[in-house]
Length: 142
Image: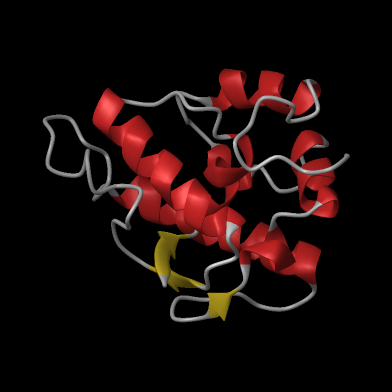
């Protein structure tokens, strides 16, 4: 089971192989591979598998309250989109969330509150504007 925090559900949509370090990129790529295989995910409220290679680094933001706020906002937006509440401890299947509808909502800025103050926001804006074409978890169409 993939253990994932709320805002990383949004990050997975736009992951195109770039990240904080080579190790982070390799780790995230491996998680995306598991998502593509539709491995069950569980929402957690702390650093997750994506955080593993950077959570102990100097300047890591993994434990900052603002990141917890990102998680809460992302889960609220995704819950509204899916029509069911998502909360810590819940499990979901990647195919239920990484859909064309989710990508469209991301592109149209309807589920982006969890992206506030993110250093990757402009990069993700471009990914979405390009139809998620270069992402590793890409949709058939948007």
